[in-house]
Structure formats: C-alpha cells, structure tokens
Image 1 (cartoon, rainbow, N blue to C red):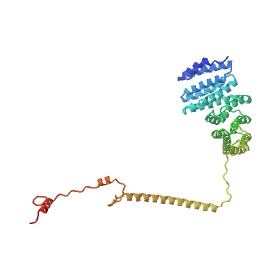
Image 2 (cartoon, one colour; image 1 turned 135 degrees about the horizontal axis):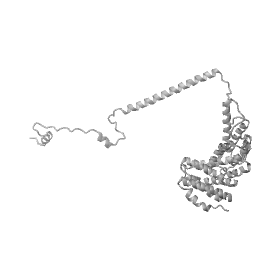
Image 3 (cartoon, rainbow, N blue to C red; image 1 turned 90 degrees about the vertical axis):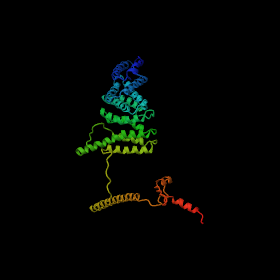
Image 4 (cartoon, rainbow, N blue to C red; image 1 turned 180 degrees about the horizontal axis):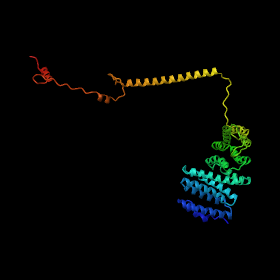
Length: 392
C-alpha cells in the first residue's frame, strides 16, 4: 500500500501551519498516528519523507513562544522513533537536515536559534537510541553515511554554518548519551578527518572541524589533568565521559597531513595536533606550558641591580609625564594671553575681514556746529560775500 500523502494534504496546508497552537497540537497527534499506520504498511520514500519534513519545518517556523518552541522541538525529534523500520529513521534524520539546509537562506536571525535547537534535539534522540543498541556497527553506519551526505560532506549546497554547528554539538550529545567505546568513537570521527583531507573545502570549514572536534578533545584532556592535579596532586588514569584513543586519532590526522594535496598551511595545523595527541597518549598535558629556563643563572646582586634600574626608569617616566603636562599648560596659557591683547592701528590691514564690515564697525564722526557771527549771519557766507567785493 502506497503512502497516501494526498489524503493528509489538508493537515499540511491548514492544520500544521495554523496560527492557533491548539489546532497545531491536535494536527501533530493526528500526524503521529498516521505515520505509525503508514509505516506499518510500507516504507516511506524519499519524496514522501521530504514532504513530511517540509511540513514539520513550517510547524516550528510558526511557533514564536520560547517554551513552546522547546516543547515542539522535542516532539518533532521524537518522531524518528515512531517509524517501524530503521531505514525510515535514517531517512527521516537525513531529510530533516536536507529540509533545514534548503530553507536555511530564508530563515531570519530571530528564527535561527530554534532550528539549531531542533538539530541538537534530533541528534540527542538519535544518540540515545544508538546507545540503547550499544552503538552497533550495522545500525550506526547508515546514520553516519547520511551525515557524510549532509552535515559532514563537501557538498557546497549544504551551508557551512550548519556543518559548523553539527561539529560543535556532536561530541556533547555523544557524551550525554554514553555507552560508546574507544574503537567506536574513533570510527565515528573518521569522516571528519576525511573531510580535512579534501583540498576544495573552505578554510572556515577546515578550522571549524579541526577546532570543534580534534582540538576540543585535547582541551578536554588538558582540563581533566589540571582538575585532578589541583584535587589530589596526582593524575588518575580513570576518567569520566568519552574515552578516546589518542594514538589512533593522531595517526588519523598524520595520514591526512602527509597527503600531497594537503596545503602547507593546513599541514602545519594538522602536524601540531598530531604532536599534541602524542603527548596526550603518553599521559601528559597536551597544552601544558613551561616557562623558558634562563641560560645564565642570576645572583641576588643581579636582582638588586635590576630592581634599582626599574625604579630609576619608573621615576624617569613619571618626571617626563609631569614635564609634558606643564608644557601643555604653558602653551594653553600663552594662547589665551595672545587672544586678549588690544588691536593696534593698522592691525586690520592684511586681515581676512570683509572691508565693508570693517568700515561699518568704525565710529561715525560727530558733525561740528557752524560758527555764527554777532549779527547772526553765517560766517562762511560773510567771507564769501567779502571776497566778491572789489577794492575802491
């Protein structure tokens, strides 16, 4: 019997994308029952699973409340356990990641966190399921093959941001699930080393995998040694969490670094990690730093002379700062005194002021009153009339 997805088109179109939370929850329960029924009859095809995952993607898209987002992400991730066949569960996980990658460029920054959270919850449910089956190779390998086609791939259509997020959470979720041995964890990390060997990957993806996977393992070892040394002064061989085969991981990275197609810059990075894995394999701290030992042994007299030189240097620096402040203060006072000096005659010459405004600023001359003679006549007219009279 074929998976009759046409009969549930109304659920995808109206119920799962509805704005009412109660309606979406009822549709989700109906969909869960429908998946059980259809999976018991025949396996889902990839086209059917992609359509299902696209509908689930928009269910989470429509949910805006924080607490309901977490609850919904948990319920969506639990759907992989509803399928009756392991092949369908693998296909569901792969299609969830493909659907997220397809819509990644259309997700705004306000909705990005909830989809990254859903990615983590899907891995959490998956690894708990694999842990309950003791990480059997026959069951584990199909999932890792799906990862190699999506989140641990060199496919440029799959965003590097999702690959980086996957690399940053996989060790945490495997540690939380537990039940994995050294040989199994080495096999799980092999695809990441294979990606590092490919020349065409971006520097961003190379740094993400090398730091989030391999450097994180070394930092965990360094932190464990430091914590135990502080606790009882000695290192205990037993450790909590995932146990790694440092020799196997170092050899894995060395094989990648010696490949002729590996870029020299990346080769140096890989060989540095290989050296640190060798230190961790011998029980040492891979990030331990020892201060350099001086070649010449210093005496107490040398230390006293160095102390005197340091004090003199400090005094010189303090005096120079005081002198610099005084010079700045004198220069400011000199500028203020120059600005308060009165202007002298002819000082406007050569200035940048407009001549029309300069003349307007000058004070007007006061007109003198004309002199009047005793007879009341104008003195000026009297002189003028006198000059017109001819002598004799």
